[in-house]
Figure 1: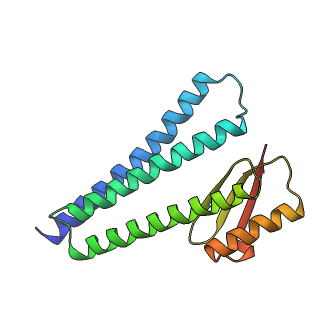
Figure 2: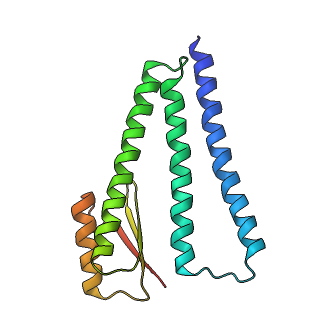
Figure 3: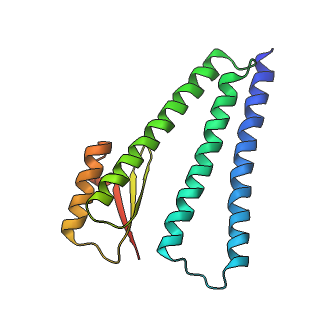
Length: 158
């Protein structure tokens, strides 16, 4: 198969992934407007909804990478890139899960951790955080992710 054809196939797959993500967001927004008359979201719903959306997005990413890896038309470079991206995603998922568990073990009711190349975001179910609580969270995040303090954002949610 020609290189041009492979590029077109990969581009179409990426476009489908983006369209799926946009549709997911639009449909979730429409459904939330229809089912809720108030504009505030309770923190319990926030954490459940966020986790479900995150898992759905990651499942789609993993399927996309698996499709590239198993495709007979994929080049060796595309397969290697997809395998590396898949391993990175799985590693991030594990790091986030462990970090969330350690933060909850410190007495917080719930939290969500997201990691990227540039920063780590921690959303904690708490009205306000004391400096001691922030220090505990920062220490856990630094130990698990090797992120610098400047790249750690802690967001309390009631």
